[in-house]
Length: 349
Image 1 (tube, rainbow, N blue to C red):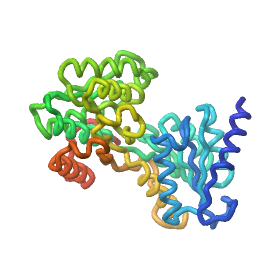
Image 2 (tube, rainbow, N blue to C red):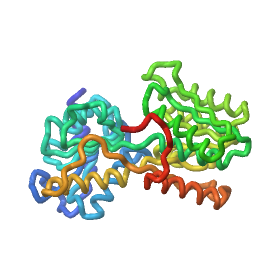
Image 3 (cartoon, one colour):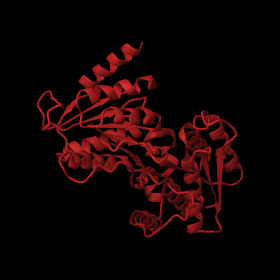
Image 4 (cartoon, one colour):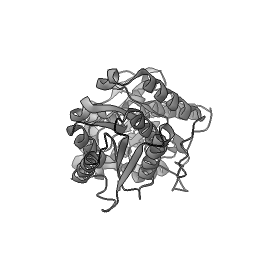
């Protein structure tokens, strides 16, 4: 079975290659051919979520002339992470991008095994790994800022003065950042707004992100108590909190990727999503890798802080007052410039 999965990965590598300046094929072991490969987390490359955002970043680098050849492998089974990464590494790719914390161990092992290849791990925090390789960086994001913008938007738009966030367990540091950021953003806008964060702490970490029933039930309880806007974050748990909220006729705010596309049923009642800007972060790190390879600045190993930002307001654009849009733009720019701090004590390393 292992060999079958590897054969699939090899076929996908051949099928999905997209030439940049190279001809119909490229020898990535040649020093003058700069190759970048994406290994997705389990699922499609065009998933309208993390995999797609990482691929768009690679395409940005290609379109700007940084890369000569790009390709992707779609992982069909988590057991194939190491083999899929190895396909590109053994072929002499200069940069390999992997997606999601689940791929973290395989990415770290590959970085140690292939010191001449640069690795970019999207959403792979390296702060707990004191022995990470100098050719590896984790593209991470300030979850407290994501929560902050969500809490601010909810406080600006709430009619009942009650808003809520449904999150996976706060034993996961990132979840705590989302929740505390949400409370801080709401309080910054209007201290009298009642903001509630509920964490899914009554199950193990293996289930906290994949409990749609709990997410929906928690959102429904909030709606029953008068909450009119819900921020959902944390896998299927957060996703189905948003679905439940909009099914009841209230509004949702998404996190990380644009939930307007990821949750079509929620789209009509989704104010916006607060995004991890994965594509520009990946493109910037590919550029940094090429610079390092050609004698420029050292590759930023460890963690690289990506930017966050707001999605389009989509179907709700006409219902959001101009002054609210302007305020949200100011908050976003302030966080980006560092002139505005969330005040959350728990910070992203």
